Length: 112
Image 1: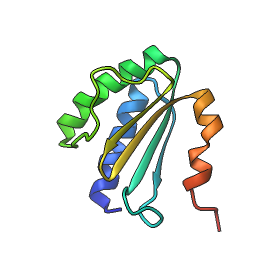
Image 2: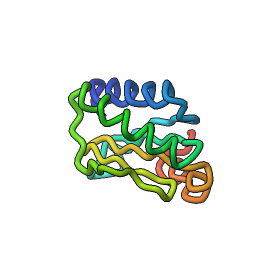
Image 3: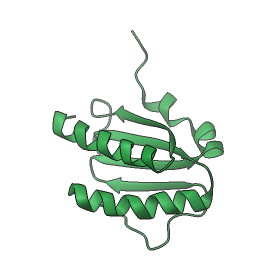
């Protein structure tokens, strides 16, 4: 992942934290994934919180010049919203979904 894309990912993560998303993680997957450079994963408190963050985030992504490939009028109501920005993929997840799918365990490299 380029330094420029890392900066954009960090700005997106900070925006999510500012909107009360918790445990926000940026994972560089560029060495292991052919279709994305990084994942941003955050926990939301409720479906309403998820919808609110997603709605506000689309404006921030536009401001940052990040194109969204899957913009929906109504974000998911099941507890997981995936926002595909090409090389940056954002996962807003309920605590239950995040624990069950454990994306960090799937994609983070072990400490060596």
